Image (cartoon, rainbow over all chains, first blue to last red; front, side, top):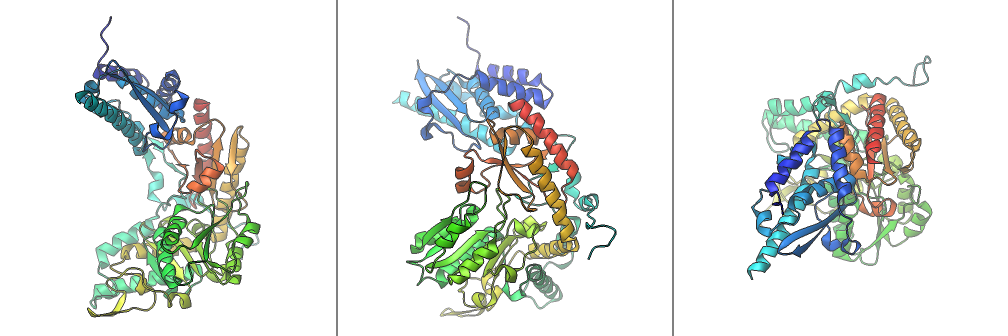
Amino acid sequence: MSQQATIAETLAEVATTLGRYPEWEDRYAAIIAMGKELAPYPQEYRTEAFLVKGCQSQVWLHPSVTDDKLHFDADSDAVIVKGLVALIVRLYQDRTPAEILAAPPDVAEKLDLTQHLSPNRANGLASMLKQIRLYALALSMRKSL
Amino acid sequence: MQSSASSRPKFDVAAVRAEFPILSRTVHGSMPLVYLDNAATTQKPNVVIDAITSFYRQHNANAHRAGHVLGMEVTAMYERARHLVAELIGATSDEIIFTRGTTESLNLLATVLGQHLSSQLPGSNIVITEMEHHANIVPWQMLRDRTGVELRIIPVLGDGGLDVETAATLIDESTAIVSCVHVSNTLGTTNDVALLCRLAREANALSIVDAAQSISSVKIDVKALGCDALVFSGHKLHAPMGIGVAYIRHDLLEMLPPYQGGGSMITNVTFESTTYAHGPLRFEAGTPNIEGAVGLGTAIEWFTSCDLRAVQLHKQELTQALVNGLCSRDGISVHGRHQGHSGIVSFTVDGVHPNDVGILLDEQGIAVRIGHHCTMPLSQKLCTNGTVRVSAAIYTSNHEIETFFVALDRSLRMLR
């Protein structure tokens, strides 16, 4: 079984992929395409409880735990945001809380997305990252009990 | 009167644009800025920027306090600005209170009218409309929660106009206050506020007009509107941010209790009691935004030096170009009534989230507003995801509207 790439490695991979598109249109097309590859979001979790606060469009994020690893289902009603959501989910999918919490929360800067994101859009990403880290923290605390 | 050579007043948009330095900047590298978010705030001409700079370079002192040269100059400048505001809306200087903006003006009115009418509020009602900005909803809700006064809402019809017939039944002998928006910041609809003020008057209620959006596109005359109070912000009229106006009819103003306590709103203070100043100063506790007021005065002089009729025709043309262009495209719905020249047009695209449109327009240098535009109750009624709002100003060119449509088509090709 091949070793799962680390968050840093996945980040570098995504950055390289997006870096291949110097034109904003192609970059956004790639982001939108990522969103389309996201697994369908379970209807029963499309509720207020799983809405990420602080986003201009609606973002849902539902965590589940298998073998001490966090798995995320996520969705948005706006396609570009959904692409960004997919991008973040790809980074943090099926990882232990320790891995998630050890990763620096500056994904947007690393990907050079901030240059292409208004502060509101960057805030949206930050809210989602914060939520992922909160879920990781909650899980790690539950384990230590 | 216009010359016989042309039936239309001349309007030189290029000359107007040249007075606004920000309009020549670029965004995202070398993309020209196309600023179509004028309903949120307007840009400032050189004369206003220079007035603020010159205030601090030449005059800075406190108003209504100092007897020295600078103090007297600044007091004269501040009061001259008040006079210019009064002239702009057909009022007198003693009816003009300077505030931080429309929001503070409405909070001031809700507070002081709430106190003034306190004995009659339980059992009475306040009437607003469904298309109000949060600034004309929340202060009244807070007053309702303090006093138990009922809050009544005039509904918006499907076409984005007000249901005036229902308004006539909602406003009754128990109505204390009617507060309504002149031009909707979300829809661009112009409401017949004179009619609502008349209904209020007949019911012995006080009337308030929110002129935040109309001040830059309609000739406001408080006497013709028949309102008891009217509010607007300077920054939507090419003046600095943080300065606004509350007009209150003179005899009403003199009956009202103060808003905040502090310096300059008093005539005498002892630890036992305080005598409050008369006139607008009673509502201007503390050092006011003097440079803002001076900037507003300059902005008003600049704005009124333009031929308002020509500006209106220009904005009407832009509004029409926006509405026609949007309506000619498949799957786009335009919200609101557009008989006027507000320059505000809100739309939604079938199957496309406004947020996505806003992001891709921004990538192309086009600044528009997306979302609920601080009118959440209206949003919930018309389009739950919000809208894309395009808003033109005096300096918006036809070419910019064409650029907007090229960018919109490109965005929609990517999103559909």
